[in-house]
Length: 486
Ligand SMILES: [Zn+2]
Image (tube, rainbow, N blue to C red; front, side, top):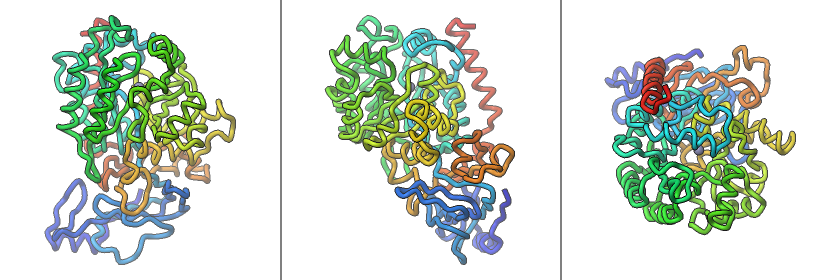
């Protein structure tokens, strides 16, 4: 990528004794610094699917000021950086809608199991995690995703061993260190094996403790403002690990606090059977009976949904985090994403925990979502533009942030990615969106979160990848030792 400082603005900034802020040269006197990106293809991902074969984006401060065809408007003031995007595609930053960071330390285990067998094998190890482990795991998970174009991350953390330290705080710290926008879903489990649940009793909290800690997390960390870097969601783990009382009271808590609700739903046939046996109804009816359908709710997976379930999600605006790789890894099945979209259900993409999706990358899920949905629904089931929309705008919708991120429209936050498509892997594909989705995982030349660079030339700006890799290896070994695996 060729890049140059705008000489005039540079001199002006120097004259005004400007200073560096976040890698930018900040003009003095309160002027808003501009970054100009030109000569790239642009996929806006707005309501009408606007694309420019060669266009520009102007970023002013933390927001997008203008997007359009051809070069940027002339005579812009306070331009502190010009990026020549020749050979690149600009898209909104990717939004991940489901993950479990701590699993970064338990990848490659239970390799040939379905969900319930996989959980039963891993719960005893997960019950030994502590704060340094979760910080390392979160750093590794976030680093890989950020390097692959994720600008908004989320994590669903639901294992809180007694005396393990501030696990949610460890994740929040890791996201802040990397400069990524973050939704932390405070999960919980209170239905241990002795109450008919799947997790062992030693891996669960009491109902009261789970609710108290969740409320405290919201009060301490949730920032609802425009451009917020940190939001909290209320997230009991799943029907088979959470009491009905906790489901109900968690929904009430979230609504009282004005935050979103997240859980796992309809992931496997075994879960469906469990719900029928224990509650006398399927998962979607159970969610409805506990206050868990609504425009402030999103659920991971939703693989086993009948027409009535999909209609209920559409009617209530309940969102879905589609996790194609994890569903394939655990042989859970294929979610009916085209039917959900046709019905008007908001759908985003999720990596899911990396113990069931070892790659941990979201940009590869664009391709996997397209391929897997075609296996179920035929060659017209999903196209490349729809896959890109799921990974950007769809994700923003389910996280409740579609007014701020998810498309490259003026006034929205400058969360965007420049994908390098003129290299060996992509250069012969004429359609840039097809190159990004059908092709190999594309390198990220630049990604911005609120106008601030997070990735430059394929490397993280704010963190040392090698140091994170070392730390994750050490902590994974420590966990294996403590859990008696090594
Ligand atoms: Zn999950």
